[in-house]
Length: 394
Ligand SMILES: Nc1nc2c(c(=O)[nH]1)N[C@H]1C(S)=C(S)[C@@H](COP(=O)(O)OP(=O)(O)OC[C@H]3O[C@@H](n4cnc5c(N)ncnc54)[C@H](O)[C@@H]3O)O[C@H]1N2
Ligand code: MOO
Image 1: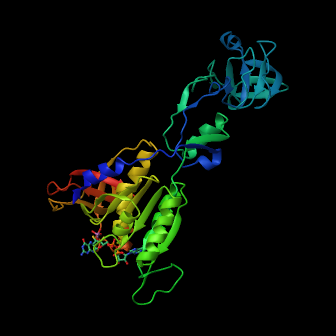
Image 2: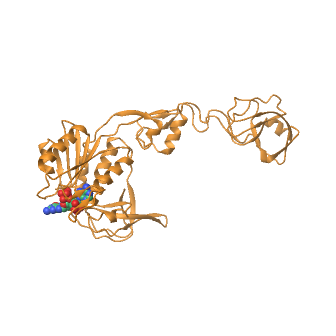
Image 3: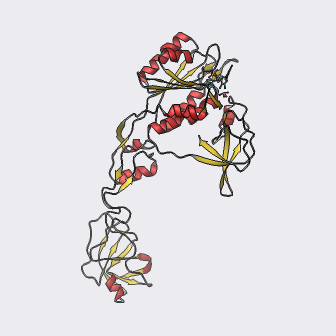
């Protein structure tokens, strides 16, 4: 049996580049950007008026002028206007180009208008209420970097530089496969010895959040059928995520079937809990990566996050960082295995604290629903309240 760090290293050694593709802007949300994005013009692209009011020439203000004849009115969206006489003013709206010969904008709240004359009601500053051309970013500057996730805010940035189509990382084709004759579909009423399949649907939902729509497949515990269906899945996907059938049961055929299908076993069984029977391999000919998760729901879900999510992030070259939390209680640790414990996190006194959940073993998927993620305890020492440990968010 290998340790968790060795297992993770073997998993990360198989990362795969799936290439890039262009997608429509709104389809790119949550995808990974595959190109650097540059400002196509200055931001803002012109001296942008930031208040509704009047625009004047500051020399008139410096000369003590307080009343201005209104020459014209310019809305946002009209081409740049001009102040013909620097002693006068023009009415101007937020978002409009600052008119020629003007360098100061005075809000409507600070003036009164009567008979086409604007009169100051208070002392005002010169050269304000203008968002200067290029003061945010200059044309040609890099404004987004490749390998970052595109969120709602990046959609706005991409839109403003005219990216109707965006180059993103291609995503792998994934099959999620459950095994086990005790499993029935969610819409069915299980017999006393049966349960509804849930692992596969959790993984499906987790992948949909990554914008991957996987194939869902359930295979009966019958060796011949399993062999045929797994082979078919290998031929049509980049990744197989299997759940169940990898421990030592008499009907746990998966390990031998995978080897028969020339999936090289890179490891089977890891010094960790949950997920000791984790199986991982690669079919080199077809470049298919196979994660075979132990069937207990928490085991599948936690190991999906610990191994597959990291493999996917590394394959897509996504920049990631680790999170840490502070323990709220002492934990007696097992010196031989890495443990992943379900926690609920809370900010307390400016610190991110983790409270252990009472889970009833790795079959207790209801407790899983109360967790924000797991803390990872390396097989080192007993942990004390206040210790800082790694946190993996679901
Ligand atoms: N003799 C040993 N027995 C077991 C060991 C061991 O080392 N030696 N390991 C235990 C551990 S740890 C786990 S985890 C399980 C993993 O077993 P399998 O991967 O073979 O999984 P199954 O036996 O098929 O299922 C286990 C459990 O999970 C339920 N399950 C499976 N698939 C689903 C699904 N899609 N949705 C919901 N629930 C699912 C299944 O009904 C079982 O109750 O083995 C231990 N045994
Ligand atoms: O992976 Mo098993 O969960 O330790 O029950």
